[in-house]
Amino acid sequence: MSDTVRSPEPATTSSYASPREVIRAISGLMLVLALASLDGNIVGPALPRIVSDLGGLAHLSWVVTAFAVASTATTPLYGKLSDQFGRRPAFFVSIGVFLLGSVLCGAAHSMAMLIGSRALQGVGAGGLIVLSQATIGDLVSPRERGRYQGMIAAVFALCSVAGPLLGGVITDLLSWPWIFYINLPLGLAALVILSLSLPAQTPRPAGRIDFAGFALLIGATCTALLLLSWGGVVYPWRSAPIIGLGATTAVFLALLWPVERAAAEPALPPRLFADRVFATGVAGITLTVTALFGSLVFVPLFFQAVLGLSGTEAGLRMAPLMGGLIVSSVLGGRSVTRTGRYKPFPVAGLAIAALAYLALAWAASHGVGANAMDGLLAVLGLGMGLVMPNVTTAVQNAVARVDLGVATATLGFFRSLGGAFGVAASGMILSATLRASLPGSAGRAVLDAGLSQIARLPAAERTALLGAYGHALGTTFAAAACVSALAFGVLLFMPDRPLRTR
Image 1 (cartoon, rainbow, N blue to C red):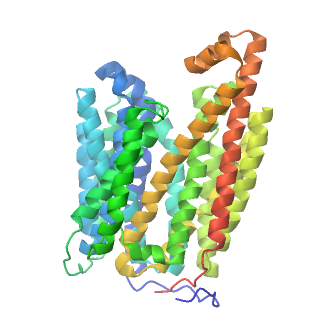
Image 2: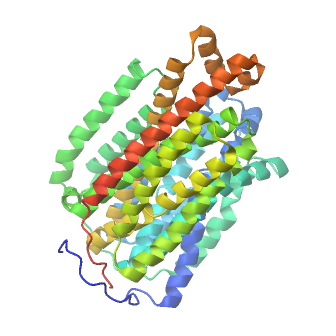
Image 3: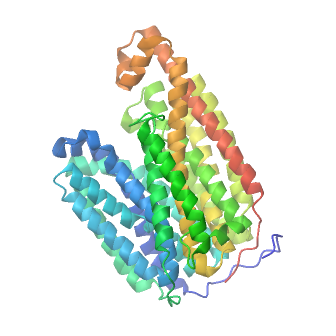
């Protein structure tokens, strides 16, 4: 394909499915996306109750980590196998394993059983989002796809806000197992709708499955995510376990490249990275999510530590950001469909996001009020909502249809890694800035004890500590601005190819 932009063609109806089939399938996909996005957020409020019932406080972080590692590691597997054997069977396996894991989580009678069940649930969840995005690619042409990718981003953002609130309500009114059992009616409804609405695909001629490539990729993913999750939290960065995880990750990656070049059906096809749209899209998404997740994890901390809001109020203050993201995702997707061009939207979105991060850095350092922060977060959401769904459309438009699943999965895979890296890097920046700002061992002791100790300090010390928190959080926002600017520079080099109408 040429990298030059041709006159936009009028949007046409996809030849893959009728409009009625598309609407039915999209409704099922929305349920699947709700399952995936809710389950990543709904567990947090229930963790204290889980510990009181099952014990095992020392292993509590594994309830979250096991799910995240398993879902990220299996994402490329679902994408590649769905290209070879079809989306329908891959969807049924993904949802079935997820629901089985949900039942076992609800029935868990020990922390070990719950962690194992969460890992199994993550194995199923690894296919939910990527298969939804790839299925939209099967159902509608790239020219029409922007509006649906915007809907995906909107559902994900909405559930990101609703998940913690729903988790708290269910835990208080019923009990924590019901945060897992609620997946059953949603998942079964999605299975029924998708079985009736997804058009059958003709499987490709069976090729050899790249078992060695998948094993190396999954191994590298698991060790990398454990390194990012444990480093500086469970173990010091210079400790033997962290160094060992880093070395193991490097070995897996060094072995993966020659294995993939030699494989007939590689798990992560090197040829995809030769395409400029794909390569810049993957790099841009990784950097974007690094900035987004790395900063957002600490926004509630600002509201609680610096502005003195409760945990519930801090969570609700994230709504403006998600609202902005939903609005721009939907409107941006429709604009891509109308104009036939995708590049201007993520480029503009990253420029807006970088400026919003700079404003947030200044606001956090100067301790501005909650209402001003709400406005800046809404602007940030407007910028970020223009990036991810439209880059996904660009990547899907660039690859051959036989690679649609693996290309979408690779994008999702690097998106997850970017989020994990962003959280770890921002945590290091925050911790290092705080320890440099707080004077004396007494201040550091308060920092290690947590936010609950701030209210007990004398007024002068409390003011100094809050100022240090504001400065440190402002530093993480400034770092996010730099990463967003880098992503902006990367996407400037993305070719703006005409969107296919079939």
